[in-house]
Amino acid sequence: MELSIDAKPVQSLYESEGLPAFALPDALSRQYGPLGFENRCIYANFVASLDGVTAIADELQSSHLLAGHSDGDRFVLGLLRACADAVLIGSNTLRDSPSTQWTASHAYPPFAAAYAELRRLRGSTPEPELAVLSGSGRIDTAHPGLREHAVVLTSDGGAARLEGSLPAAAEICTLGPGPQLDVVRAVAALRSRGHHLILCEGGPTLFGQLVAAGLVDELFLTVSPLLAGRGVHERLSLVEGRELLPGRGVRGRLLSLHTQGSHLFLRYALADEVGAR
Ligand SMILES: NC(=O)c1ccc[n+]([C@@H]2O[C@H](COP(=O)([O-])OP(=O)(O)OC[C@H]3O[C@@H](n4cnc5c(N)ncnc54)[C@H](OP(=O)(O)O)[C@@H]3O)[C@@H](O)[C@H]2O)c1
Image (cartoon, rainbow, N blue to C red):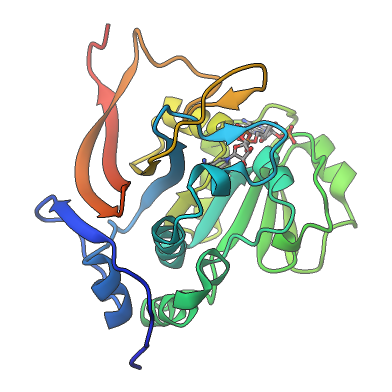
């Protein structure tokens, strides 16, 4: 199907050789170039300001503000969701985005048909499953993100709290006593649901734990050409709750670089840095 989409392509400036490449619909390859993943991959997507801010406390959906309402950022987010079997988020991210649905079509509606075509070609469900990690189980059970194909990964106590209150399309998956849960078990639970490609959309607390556990294979980072600053209000960086240096560094290897205007779209493979001091 030929799509007439009036969106400026993101320009590819660098692409590492030998990356996996899915058979993308023309509309997506024209807009981005090639993209694919190994059979099993956990990849994260974030947007950060030039000064490294990813979230502004008390500002709902601050990532939109930090992205400078960039079409390119929304397009890439939609493309990454379109490739995913599941989108994993922490409960604060659910709370801070009260009207969000973590679907490809919701990320960037002008490409909804192309994202859907990619999923059809890959034999995927129409949209990825949303997985919300919440040890406490204190989440808004009426959140629109939970209305379709969702799972809440929670503790025994959280499961008791949520019992009978989730929409029919959302399931509870219990991971033990909690409230702090093992992220390795959370990922194993998603694997046992048949999810090979897992997109982590944060926030930085969840991402920090996944990185510290060595679970994240790739990071897609949009660098937005804005300075956010710091003052009295809490602002988060990319990794919260875990110190990686000194001692245990994690190093990125650049896989690709795209631009649109003054926004940069970076793709890194992540691996432990041996002997980081
Ligand atoms: N810039 C971006 O691209 C981007 C992307 C995503 C999010 N964000 C922003 O980031 C902010 C939220 O990030 P955040 O770091 O505060 O929170 P978060 O990672 O979204 O969620 C943290 C919550 O997840 C649950 N959780 C995480 N790890 C757990 C574990 N091991 N066991 C049990 N529960 C666990 C806990 O929920 P319970 O307290 O319910 O137990 C915890 O309070 C929001 O402002 C959001 O908009 C920005």
